[in-house]
Length: 436
Image (cartoon, rainbow, N blue to C red; front, side):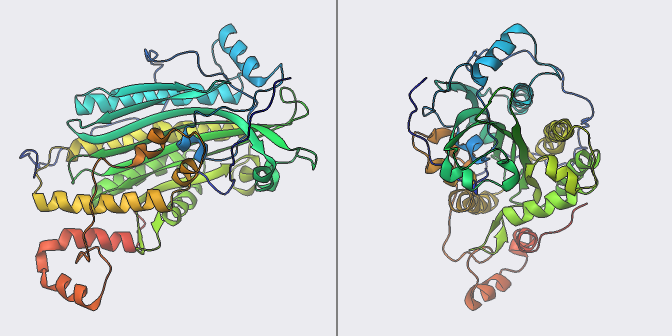
């Protein structure tokens, strides 16, 4: 039996980065994308390595995907799920009969490659791929583009994490996620896999976008391979513009809603409201952006409480997550292609820096994934902070977006038409809308 290494403290409550040229601002029709069907099977990245040894899994914390830890985990008794899954990958291709761990790993790798290839086409520069691995199974690939032609900073990360959940963390899990956990169980092995991305364009007319989809699994400690398993999915995507183009926001939300509606008409309104609530800065009394969808803890009990009935809840929710991932490029690519070459002024670039300051505030103060990662021993800091923009700014008592006082309100009124578009955005951030 292997000697356990020290556990990492985890928390269940935590779930889950002068104008350049004069450009034309003509309105180009949206490029058409289809969200139907499965993405074509891409050729593997040259950076892929046989690092991803899957372990007995535990769906636990979305923040594991953000933290992308590289510290050691407790070794598992033989035979382990790490060894089982490694053997399965060597013996045959991943199919619908494969464990969900392997299917989710395959899905997020395929979408990472597809997204990186499309963003590289748009930007004209290639991503830097950084492969990392965990000694007892798991690892990831961080694909980052910095100082590109279109994107000031863009990151698309895949993470496969295995580890041991200590008793205090187990006790914070939802009741239906620990059905087989007795009082004598001091730790649980967990599996977590996810794809996360954040894109920060140069042009202030082009919005920042964020996405994260993840899967978690836990196993009965008495029989990790053949025993009962608990699992759940989490994820979502949201848009953060510096200047408001209502047609862009409607397109983004409509594409997401279409993907949701193919599975359950109640998903979009529920997850949209969840997103508005999560991406909110209480100290500023405003939202980080114009929203999208956000969800967590999607499992069999979730389906039982919704209008959807299924004989195979895991398969049903995997299909929903697959469609959610497939909807990303159609939701964002037409927007970035439409806005990336629009002309902008130094003042508009400065406004973008102030809005990015809000992005930094949210991620460092409120985002659960970032908070968890920064408190995790041996965490991969570069991956945790990938979501932050390359540049950001703060201004004391900004008339439009700063702390509002009687004096600043007067100054704002005196500015007249100069800040109309900035005010339009602030109104939406302070009063979220139903876009579709």
